[in-house]
Image (cartoon, rainbow, N blue to C red; front, side):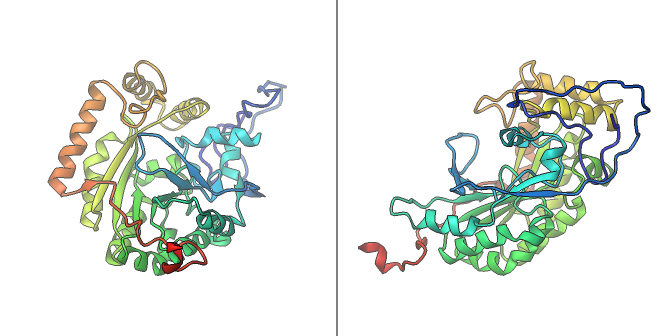
Length: 353
């Protein structure tokens, strides 16, 4: 089995979907194992879902609705908590998650239908929560931009979370929406160490370029914040104050952070990554992860999964609060205007009847 990821990919491993009736295991057949794997092309398939808006009741997130234009993500972040969702497609949460994507070509039209429903009640929609709405394939497919056009037309509030500079393409939509208090953007910055970023999140925008994106959004009048996520103990936790300060200097107004989450297949994938890229720290990182998760690799309980428990979790909370206070950064959630919403094909007067 290869020990080096294919070029531009985040993991070497392809665990089978847990929903299959069979599982593959590596075996030694006597042939030499290759040290590298050739580049893998991204494959696309149509997502035939009849709806695009997903609702949630989690107390850990400040929104009730979200849209994910893509299933799977080319960014290849080895730590991505969304990897296990690929198993529902019968695909691997490993390399398949990065290379075999599902997309919704009719997402904008489906959204129009849902927003036009008589029982629809407007609340901010989060865009790109599970997988990045501005991952590389968006440059050609434009699904996210089509969705934004519908939201802008309907004066519908949206929160965007991304680690891609591609969002700058849509400033012509985001700027006017910002003037109506209809948009907030959070730029995720995991590390400013380019060497670490290159292996941890291989196809995501480089850290220094994300900081420039924060400035570009701020200069365009778009409320922008920084999301330090995931916080990985003994790997990037020392960068918290640096990243918050760099983002604040470029115009970030809000901030948030999230602790590393390792649900299901993500745990083994991340441990493999540690062994391959930072073997001298692997045991220490996982020891701290377990201390933050009550002795487990992952804790999925609401109220705990984003922040962890124990003295290290308390220390992170205190450091974050102090840094935000010193830099004048507010909590990541802004109040957006839901009163301007106009359903597709209707004007304000029509809504009275």
